[in-house]
Amino acid sequence: MDVNTTGASAQTAAQDKLGISGVRASQAMAKTDAGRMEKYRPLISSAAETYGIDPAIIAGIISRESRAGNVLKDGWGDHGNAWGVMQVDKRYHTPRGGSESQEHIDQATGILSGFIHHDKFSSWSATDQLKGGIAAYNCGPEKVQSPINVDVRTTGGDYANDVVARAQWYKTNKNY
Image (tube, rainbow, N blue to C red; front, side):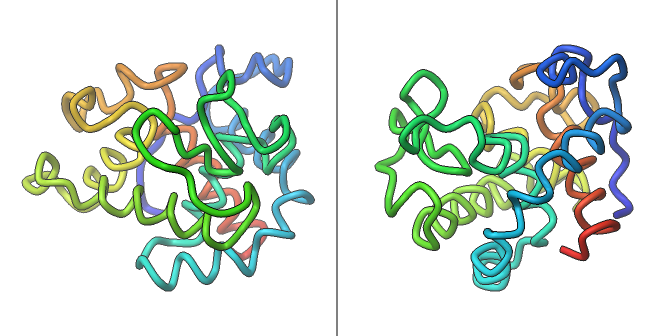
């Protein structure tokens, strides 16, 4: 809750035809996905406990990646390259489990945890490690340049900041 965030870019907000950007846009998108998110709550809680990741962060990623499953086609997104509600990229990982399964959410949360604890971010503050790991989940750690410009090479130029803003909304409004 204490992580500073700029929220969604105008490019990301345009997906929902929002006339706003920033934290307010991220909150609006999280709210849109909230009803669909509920069916993942027990799966999110289990993965959060297993990997020591705040469940709100997992919910924020599910909202950003697949709009809580709403944009998947037969479980796939990203032009057939990414699997499941957390969009595990088949070019870098062998997706496991069903697209909405515990196995999938566990795999994706494990990948996220690995990025948050990546050696590249070890000298960064804890909040910067979190944002760096979230950004790396989107674009890989090699593209995350610094804590100041964590999103410069992420999709929409806002991935970590948007996920954090959505997570803050889920924490505050849905008790994740």
